Image 1 (tube, rainbow, N blue to C red):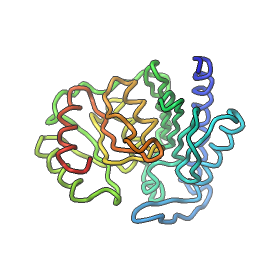
Image 2 (image 1 turned 30 degrees about the horizontal axis):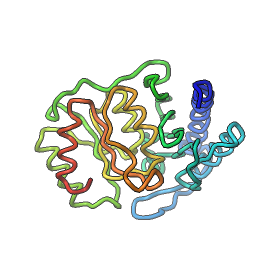
Image 3 (image 1 turned 45 degrees about the vertical axis):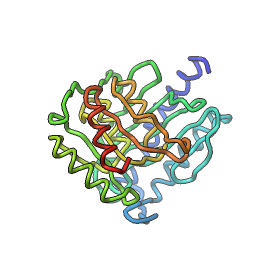
Image 4 (image 1 turned 120 degrees about the horizontal axis):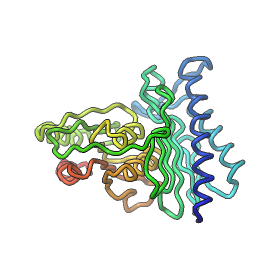
Length: 263
């Protein structure tokens, strides 16, 4: 794939992320009323998720009809050129009126992450990256923090009920014992974007779906951070464990995650 193909897709995706975010924000503000449903224990979906994903799917198909798309709500497949989309990451926050959620869009060519975008409509911040071209928040280049020690780190550890609870609690205990401050803001994609922007020093989660992880992992890589190889051995659709951090704390953080038994 030549550079102009990537640039045209990236430019289109930046506009699309903002358009999708604007629609999602109308639902969030209840300008368009909606009801939320539980897909499982603390796993939420709403009409807003479906409407935003439909918008993204229609726009991408019109612009790049040969590309495939995998979305959280309607599924899809992975071809040589694939868009991987979470229309609203952090739906549990979204449906409760909490302003920590985002739109996540990634473009993957032959298994390689090439474009990643995470849009936060609440703060009107668009985080985006193109492989080998750096990471940005709107027009400003971003980079991971300079944190070198876990006992100086402000980090996030994602948890959802499908993760083994005892392993998660063991990991959090080990992290606290190592001196880290540990949060969970409830939207993995946005937490990864904030690692890329230097606001958090690291993010870990024992399993993330590709629509949650793909864009954020590219952002962290392009911002100078380190990430664990993703996905796992079962392929992209199956997802895998996520560790993303500043370079100096990546190894000690990985050791703690592995020692917890959940990774």
